[in-house]
Image (cartoon, rainbow, N blue to C red; front, top):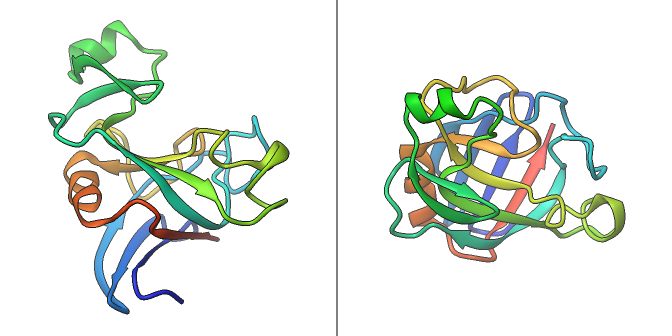
Amino acid sequence: MPDNYIVIKLSEQRLRLWENGALSREYTVSTAANGAGEQSGSERTPRGWHRVRAKIGAGCASGSVFVARRPTGELYSPALAADNPQRDWILTRILWLCGEEPGKNRLGDVDTMRRFIYIHGSPDDVAMGEPGSHGCVRMRDRDVIELFDRVPPGLPVLIEE
């Protein structure tokens, strides 16, 4: 194992950050409602080794709304949610993942990056500790800010059941 990496354990709905070979942070998350899987269009969370391909949202306010990895200028609120019930809220920060295992989570119909799988912030009323996303790893805004500030691009991420 590398000295610095993230492990996301689907069965526990937990994300653990390892720094200098030791567990440094642990967060409750929400992964895919459809469970684990790598197939494009499955709305499942891909397994295996990944890397943080890009960090998006540095300096944005907590609750900033993103669409297609761009801040919209909106801040999440219950009123905004009521006006847009169909939106899958991606808030505050994005850690865009890319697969590292060709044929499993990289290239072709299983490519994590082309599936737009992120670790990202979500509204406070979204349940954590239970599956509920469309494939991404959802976190509380305060937690994703802390994680974002601690990890570099290229950091290894292992997603396992």
